[in-house]
Length: 600
Image 1 (cartoon, one colour):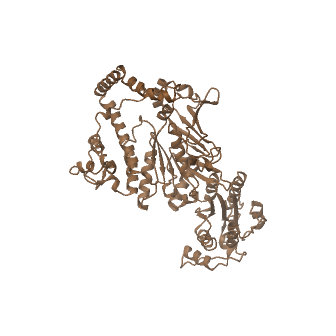
Image 2: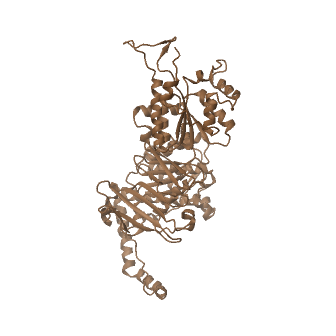
Image 3: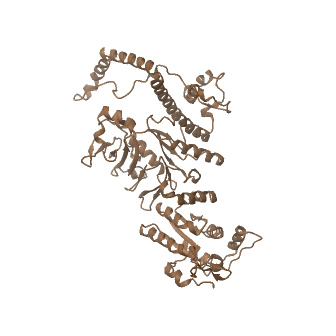
């Protein structure tokens, strides 16, 4: 199954009914937000949901109060590879015929107690107790396998997972490539199991256990049986320890020997557990394996290696689904390695076998040009309620024009994505305004957290207003009014019919205004401030050509008197940081029409 959505309520720092994470047309979600508001709890919530019979601790309840019942709902999509499993266990009745979805809900209402599980009856449209085979392991085995990579990873736990993963892949290779031998071995094992069960060895153990168990619980019986839903693990019969080392790159690998080389690499997991098992295992291969022990490398390299090892299996489309829960993947990485790491992560997410949820503080990991990406802004209000504002790739690249614009803007300003991490953003249309506004805010609003976004041009502003609105980010928009018509050497340019040629920049005033109105309709604060005609005209500003625009703007900002509210950019900055309140000027289209006087 593939995760479709996850709704979380009253789990740790998460409160409210607006905490929903969705996988629509995306395989990777980046969750971003302020520190210490509960982002990592989203990862832990899915882990909780997928863990069978997980008991809740007092710290798992919101405000550590069990009266705040923890509710986690998850929707999954049945896929082709689920067909055999669903048929064998009679699970298809829980699948919505129209959408192919299966919905579950787990509720924790007491400390040290497991959750009550409910499954949505697609015919009745309501949740019923149990469902979906009843047993928790049936649900767990059907959901994507979890790979949790923590911010401070436990090397032992990661390597234990790697060993399990490699063994499962070996078992599949045995099934696929050596079907006859595998079948014979499996048949032999089954016969041995039948002998164990036939001789009633398990019955003898159960009887012995019940001898004392029944004294305490006379109305109950303890049974020990084999698990009918689990394959025999033939790899245990041929089990070897493995070792992974990292050293200098060896000679190019012959592609025809990929499986052979993989098998050799697979023999390389024993040093991963050397810390727990002692140095003996590591010493066994000193003469044959070169490179430093895996867990002796830095955390950044280890986390990169984990992703690369996952990539070995990424083309196994028929394998069980995996969901990677990645906590702050940017940690420990040198800036020069972040882009390469980002590309590896996206490459992994492009494979159907993986879904990825990342909690991150680093805008450099976000590439909005990549398909199947989604951003989720996690916010916490003053009353403690939390919300997730999520946007998919379609918002950023809804058409070819938007896609081209975004690609151009990313090249122009690689820090654009940083605006999505802010609570409050000032949008300006050019370098001059950006430099001056940043200087004013850094000088007179040092403790504030207002991000200044240079959109590159007035034309790009509606695009960014819409995106920031989707994330419910407070925004201030500063731009030029411009003139109504196009001028050439002091004269209005005429069209072929001799009517004045309209200025597209003037038309944008209305477009920007319309986007801001939508913001305020959905309770996403947005306000604009306009330089009459343009910044230069409104401020009597001319840049020094010898200094260039950036340095000229910086020196101009240094000379500004922040108390002088007759200077438009100073007035705007004072309003933005709350020094003043102007309830009169709204810079509406009507205001601009009445205020802007054409130059000629």
